[in-house]
Length: 416
Image 1 (tube, rainbow, N blue to C red):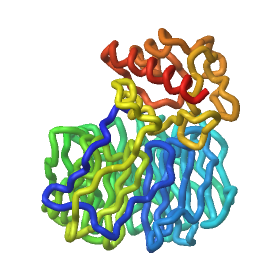
Image 2 (image 1 turned 45 degrees about the horizontal axis):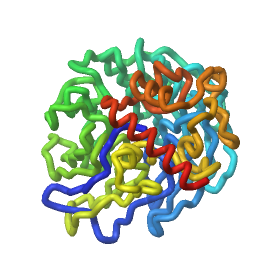
Image 3 (image 1 turned 180 degrees about the vertical axis):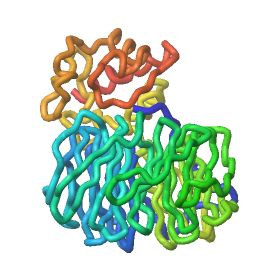
């Protein structure tokens, strides 16, 4: 339940293509995208990975395999796709498969980034603990090595098959196909991701800059796009797309980072971007996948139509909009990223039937009352309910916490 405001989404000077309808299928924030010829794969906080047909804007395959968020996805040249998760697992899927063709064991660290080699024979995964795993798709053999001393924030394959990684230790590193060190380059700021462009390695940073490096690690160009962190990046042919925590997206020339178009894709962070030859796709906290014309033509204003359940015009209903991205208020409705909150007051934590709670959450001794719900949003989930998959956030104003509790009680009474 990230704090956010669902509001008008306006493309600065432009708008949304009339023919480019949103893709709707996730029950919570979407943090992973990859696009190819006629298809797109997405991964969300709801543990779903969805393979989309772009011509019809419909889901071809909906999978639920990972324990927790689907943190990264990649399409395969064979028509299948790869998913990775908060559980540290990689899963290889056929396009129409309901179960993985192959999956790695669960790990102690979440996967932060994924890449597929140019020949489609190998997948690389970067972990929060700095490791990189390379999986041979033919033999299903995996090898791993310590690439960084902190989280691997991005990785990608160069055309010759070498691997490039960036990490929380402020390093850009190139690895040979045998995982030997080719070079190590210090970075000026915290990198938040990378994409392989025609002209080199495009890296986004927490200082709001996009910087371009050649395949030997030499600095080529930089463009300061914002005074806030950039959080997603993708590249295709001669174009790089980058997005920030405030919802802004930039399309730039890949050779010298000259801006071509700038637009606002969301009211909050754009957690993922993907691109085809004609369209750019964005996703974030509201669960929608939006697509935009790559050249910025024929665009119009639109309103995100995510409506909170049983909105009664109260302050509590306004606060509930933030929760409605991941939770339902309908009895036993666990189709979204998190369990239904119907009848939550007076219920012990992690006891709603039909939802797969983490073991850590089931061991907590909490009864949900007005006081404990208020404490949850006072201190945040990481402190108050360790082991929860709930994104970290707080509600600062006591009156907003009280209004939310009153709304939950009122809606439950109305439904019973």
